[in-house]
Image (cartoon, rainbow, N blue to C red; front, side, top):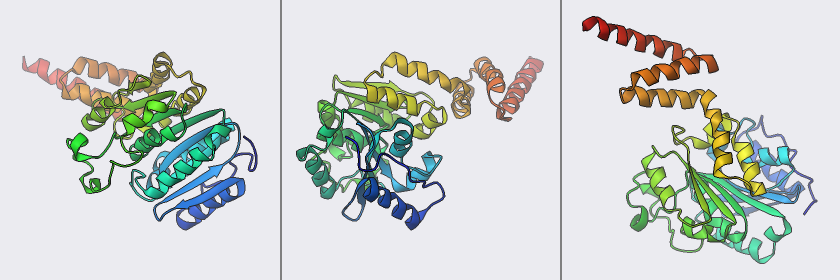
Length: 314
């Protein structure tokens, strides 16, 4: 598929609020389509190449995780020449809205996804849930879901206390239980930090044979931001789109965490808390050579002072 817009060109970096929305929606109208989906969701498509990335975005999160105030799909589309379909939500909705269901039904029935050679769904958190759940609308697609929830239904995920205010939302109707919706995908990749208990428990529910669970230790709840900060989210999505994202390739990309200050800081804290002080000092010495931040010099000095005081007391 090509035309009508030949890809993403609109610059959103200096915009906010209503001006941002106006420019974002106008880009869809000019380059593909914009369709409001009830009061809380919008679908914006900008047509470029024959690969389509479908991203789910929460409006309040875009500025937090993107360097140019653009949806993740737009960033990839600019770099790769992909077409992009963005589902934008106002707040955390998990996209549980009949207008969203109807939209994906129409996209499937109208053959929209069949016009592309490759389709990749992407999202993080509640948007990761949606990426997995709605991927069933495009059989044979690939899915990258960061710390997705499987469901918020209390009978299945009553152990997760984080989203009690959203329990009134129904996860029993169409596109409901995300792990089952992945059955039609060519491949699904579920990324999570195993130290985040609830995220790990949700990830464990994604058990289909076409799903690869990829643990990301020490990257925390802000997984998308950390992967982006390590410059590995984009290559990971490229490999997922191409169908050649393997565990070996993922772990090769993850070597970038060795120079990523937030990861090193998290690792250092875990080692200190567990009393593994020699390893903590090694992390500090390594980090000093990889990052200019003074935090690690200060922590190393504190660890050495602590060791000297302990030795003197013997």
